[in-house]
Amino acid sequence: MQLKNFEGQKIPAVSFKTRENDDWKTINSHEIFNNRTVVAFSLPGAFTPTCSSTHLPRYNELAPAFFQNGVDEIVCLSVNDAFVMNEWAKDQESENILLLPDGNGEFSEKLGMLVDKTDLGFGKRSWRYSMLVRSGVVEKTFIEPNVPGDPFEVSDADTMLNYLNPQAQKPDQIAILTREGCSFCSQAKEDLTKAGLDYVELPLTHQARSRVVGAITGAGTVPQIFINGKHIGDGEALKKYLRD
Image (cartoon, rainbow, N blue to C red; front, top):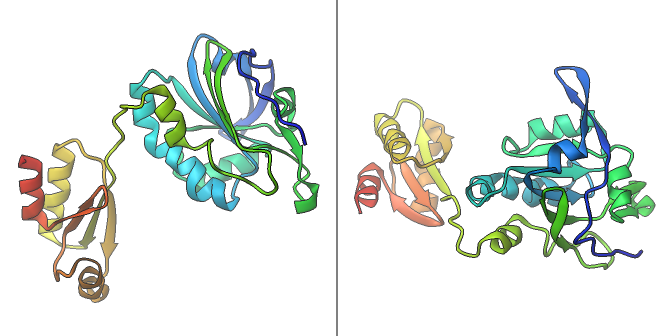
């Protein structure tokens, strides 16, 4: 298997057959890449472990930072049909990503990234890589090393963002443990929203709440807030954190 760097190349003219509102829609590659700054990453297949657990979700999570640093769109490519890609989009955290089905592998082949994975029953698939495209020309590529298996070392979202801007501000990772009917939880969520902070809510049942919260935080009440891996504490602790 031979993989070559394609920096400096123009994006190939390819038509992608997509599905929108139960109808076929053709999108030309030049519509996506010309006169724009686009980050694109390609992966072996929808619903596969690394692609679903890390590769796609992290690009979606860091999308605001990419957009703040001049990127117009983030594109995920895979040699899958439009039906599979649409179902994967529903299953994944992908609201900030355009998922493109390279169903026949034409785009991947023209970039030299189409590889044979028949030993896994996959047929022809794309090698894993990412690229920065400015006005239809590939400026930078991060191509996974040519080794057996499915390496995932350099095409990740953090590597690409660091190339764009090593000082880029990444979105905070915020989670809040709550339970239904908790007025303190509602207040904490309101405080986060007013501060312009996006968060993930983890609602707990009344029966599980004390055991889960106690096991994770050592406390016995909700809400409990975590920001960037740090346990902030309850609602009052959050107010203090936001003031500081």
